Image 1 (spheres, one colour):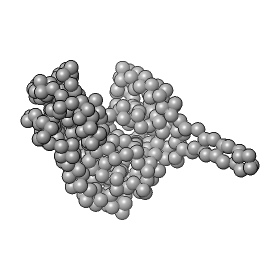
Image 2 (cartoon, rainbow, N blue to C red):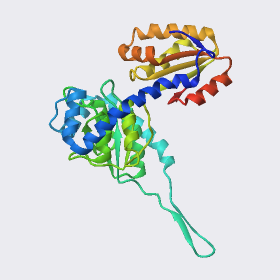
Image 3 (cartoon, rainbow, N blue to C red):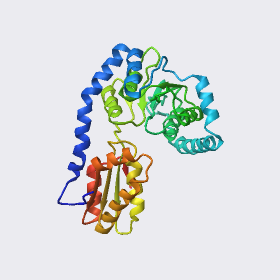
Amino acid sequence: MNIQFAGDTTPSALRERASAQFSQVEAVVRGIVEDVRRNGDAALLQYCEKFDQAHLTSLAVTEEEIRTAMASVGEALLSTLEEAAQNIQAFHSRQVRQGFSVMERSGVMMGQRILPLDRVGLYIPGGRASYPSTVLMNAIPAKLAGVPEIMLVTPPAPDGTVSPAVLAAAHVAGVDRVFKVGGAQAVAALAFGTESIPRVDKITGPGNLYVAAAKKEVYGLVDIDMIAGPSEVLIIADETAIPAYVAADLLAQAEHDPMAAAILLTTSQAVAAEAAREVEWQLAKLPRRSIAEASWRNNGHIVVLPSLAEAAQWSNAIAPEHLE
């Protein structure tokens, strides 16, 4: 890792790679989205075979599969999911918007009604890792808003199964139906509807670059939460930072995706050097080393800046997904 200084790079340069990657996949995604629009389930099953190496005859997760998942995750994880669900519900219940009505002196009644969407779709990443917390964080606010139907899509494993932890979280959160499909094709299925998957009003949840591009492609036909591409973190650190902790936080995002970005802005050359060494040391011990290493080599940056104020300016210009 070559440590850079303020004159060596710019905030826009740190973002150029991500922008270029996004542009490259958009044409591919348009083709996938159009294929799903035209061919429905047949296209989805072909993409499951092509991208997930899963030979499926049905996309829907059965009640039996959910019961099996609930039995296999263990009491400790189930208890943790239920506790997390309670905490998430307690927080988001304070965000529920209320309608109002006002009578003017002239006798004119004005007001606003807040109504839930009829159906939402949750995209939950899979394949490289399991994200039960993402299920809770997306499904519970929808339940609190009063959404009657919550659909969930997530990529299958090559054997056609779905992460038991994800299925358990879906059960805890009150998800109505789960489908074994991921990637841009899953987003298209939620946006257009297929023979198996109902069309939704809004799509939420994170994903890789292809998922982000697909959400951008279907926005307007359906609502989306945001265009969140591969995970990215930017850490601002001064001389008091503990390099081992900084390195761990950089790698915590890098291991999500080979296209993830991890950036350290620091005012200390010593912290920069030690954090770079720590990253290499910790990389060697990671179970997901190949993914994290690809991310770090291609999209990892350590930049030494003259002040925290300048680091804040860089952060504002970069606008990372996660800021520490």
